[in-house]
Length: 258
Image (cartoon, rainbow, N blue to C red):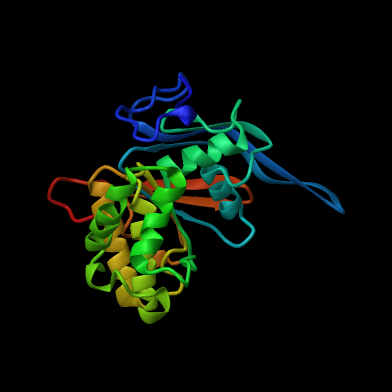
């Protein structure tokens, strides 16, 4: 079954790929990425094997040039691996898949949060959130405004729904971007330096929300340079020279904070 051709309102979970277990969200098998340069081929990712489980809140850290942005692009389908397999939520997102199919899959299964928000300045916060549903053709047309308002309520922005991005704070813009990323109810949220341009109070609000989403069953993968944020995640991955060099999990008990 090819889940990339699913109907606009899929009612069931996608069929599980033979390489992937039901409890996993991301499975990477020998992911390699090479680029050609004037000096020859450069290998940025060197055969990464990695499994991320459903409901994990994972931080990915590494110095500039370590390969973390390239790895993120492999997960989101923005760039293609030179070798290896990438299975997300049971779907191999590269093998036998066209760009248009991958784009459609991404809109329905993956929420992406960027450092610089990328809200359209001429649209209100409500309209920005609705836009992701329009692109992914999710929910009936008449349902989309209500769904968008629900997402703004989730992040505490319902009273700002009809304001343009320039008329709210940077922290509120990032919260609106998260609401947009969640509009199609994706099981996986990927955040690239989501607090990099925020003050500490706004950053804590974002991380609190990510923790809540993870507790609710969503998988959250966050790239960050801020070591204080890695203490808030349930798992921390360190990448260096194109390889995962450290992988630590925080033990979570029923009574321990996350």
